[in-house]
Amino acid sequence: MTLDLEKIESHRLSHPRLREMIREVLFFDRIDSTNRVALEMASDGMPGGLLILSDSQRKGKGRLDRHWFSPAGANLYFSLLLRPYLPTRDFPLFSMVASLALCDSIQEATGLSVEIKWPNDILIEEKKLAGILLESKTAGGETTPLVIGIGVNVNVGPDGFPPDLEQSATSLKAVLGHPVDRTDLLNVILESLAAQVSLLQEGKKDLLIQRIQKECTTLGKRVHVDTLRQEFEGVAEEIEDDGALVIRMGDGRRRRILIGDITHLREHAEHR
Ligand code: BTN
Image (cartoon, rainbow, N blue to C red; front, side, top):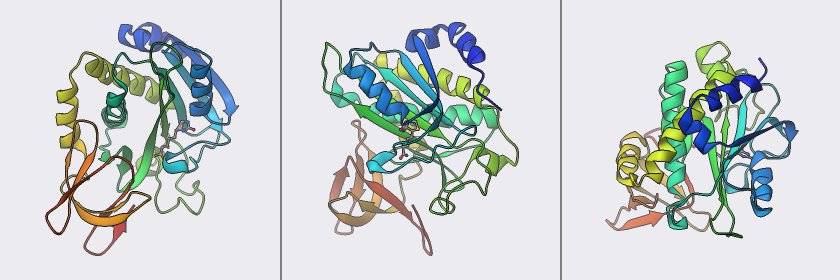
């Protein structure tokens, strides 16, 4: 199933909130990374409201400099360039916005419940279904650009992942046993994203934080934390309003982390 660009455009035009959030859509068959191109265009002064969508990526970027598996004809890879009227310290909240939008839209489009693992991994059956990469650049103009990059594993078959991802990644097709229409899914995701973005722009930060506290399955779990400088274990207690995760250590101290990798620990097994 190919992406139906006309359907994406007519859906955008017929939904006022979407029309407001996305002013222009650029589609590529193949590109190195939708995030990279969005950031480059932002540096060249592109206004907010640009959606870059590609059928495949040669150098899809994941968090912490990882590679994002981006084969053609199967999944969704897109980046939304915004220039939010919010202080840059609030930008990490867009990661919650995108996680909640994915959670709601995947449920709506497929009936599947997904889990949010801090900071913004979208999991099904403890395997990674989708990822979010936020990137920003120091402002060249009045407003700082923010790029929200989203990759969703939609129609890669259960045997379609490379060996290093086989155990840790999944797709909607692998879980449902049938393919999902990428265009319809994208339209639902964008609508949901527009709803969550307007909540944040309207100053309803508290609502977002309350919801993420409810939906994030990392909370209450014993976790291994790798901040890239240090590793430790503890219990994930809370997400603060700047998106930081608070960990209660064995000695009772609480530590805040803003960047890092979390592994949910189980009695007998670990899931990254
Ligand atoms: C993660 O590591 O979980 C984040 C993955 C983000 C992947 C998406 S695919 C579209 C956009 N362009 C990129 O190069 N990366 C993001």
